[in-house]
Image: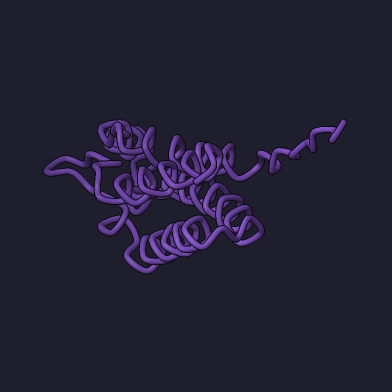
Length: 138
């Protein structure tokens, strides 16, 4: 296994682990990706599994595509979580109370694993195969 494939493999494993880690802390308990949006979390999990399969079977195009797709999904999920936090109390007619309650929802350390895993997978997938040089026969 090449070093770049190993880096991609580790990145996809970290991405899978990041889906189970806490990403939001509402008033009571912690939310992981599946508590935030279960179908979206399953899509992130499936993309990471496809990336692992592409890495194991030495398919760099599939691995690269899965790495890019995972990064896009994580960035989009972060933006959607940001919007969800800021609009979750919009039903309250008093703007100051709604802003106060929205400010009490905290982002947790699971985002570091999600972003780090997808960036690591992309870094490993973006390396080109090293060219082998033949020795002169003389």
